[in-house]
Length: 349
Image (cartoon, rainbow, N blue to C red; front, side, top):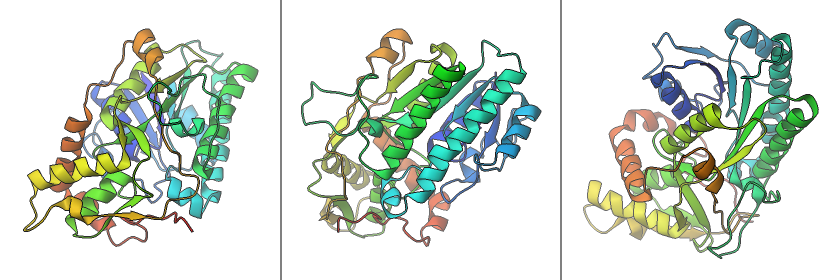
C-alpha cells in the first residue's frame, strides 16, 4: 500500500511512519518541520527505498496537489496538527490555521485526487484526532467516551480538533469521500517532545528541578503507549468501514499525580539520586484555564469489530519511556535551551 502521512516527523506520526515502512508499505511523509518535528524521529527508516519526505505545509494547496499527482497514494493518514493545550491557550491562531484550515486544504486536495482517479473504492482518508473533543467526564468509572458522545471541547486546541473532525465527516456526507476517523486517549512513549507531561517530568527530574503538576493532581487521563496507537491506526486503515469512527484507548486511567509518582519511582530504580527521591521534587502549580477533570475511552467498537486491543501496560510502557530518555540524551539535550521547553506554558492567572 502507498501511504501519504502528514505530520510524520512528529511524535505519533513518526511512530506510524516507522511501523508502516517496517510492514512493507510505501510512505511519503508530508511535514512542515515546525518546532516539534524532528528528522531524527524517522532515522531508522530514512534510507529505505519505501520512504520519502516532502517538506511542505498542509495549507499549501498547490504543493499538496503536486504530491498527490507524483506519489499516487492509496490512502492518506492525516496526523499533522498543533497539539499542545498550553500553547493553544497562549497562542490559538496557529491551531486554527493548521488544524482547521490545513485539514480543509488537505481534504480538498484528496477529494480532487480521488475524483481524478475515478473515485477508487479502496481509497481512504484517515483523520487522527483526540478524545479531548468530547470535553470532560465526571469521576465515575462507569462513564466513558464512546463514538457517539456529544462534542464539548473546552480549549482552543480541542475546539480546533473538533472542527477538523466535523469537516472530515462533512466531506464524507456531502461529497462521498471515503473517510475514517479515530479519537485517541493521551499518548506517551519514545520521541515525545519535552513540552508534554511525561517527558517534561522526566527531564526536570533529571535536572534536579521542580516537577510541576497542575492544581491538586487529581485530573484523570487514560494513557496509550504510542506504538500501540500506531498499530491500532494501521488496523483501522486496513479493516475499518468507510465513514466510521473508532475510539482508541489504553485502558490505563490514572490521576496526573499517580502517573508522575510512577515516573519518579522508575527513575529512582533506573538512576538513583545521591540523596532523597525524585518524588520530593513534585510541586503543585496554579491550574490551567479550562482544565478537563477526566478523560476515559470506551474502546469496545475497535476491540469487537476490528479485533484490536492495547498490548503494553502502563507499568511496562513507562519503564520503556524512562529508559529511552535515559539512553537518548543526544535526542533531547539540544532542545533544552529552547524557550518553553520543560516549562508549563498556560498559566492559571
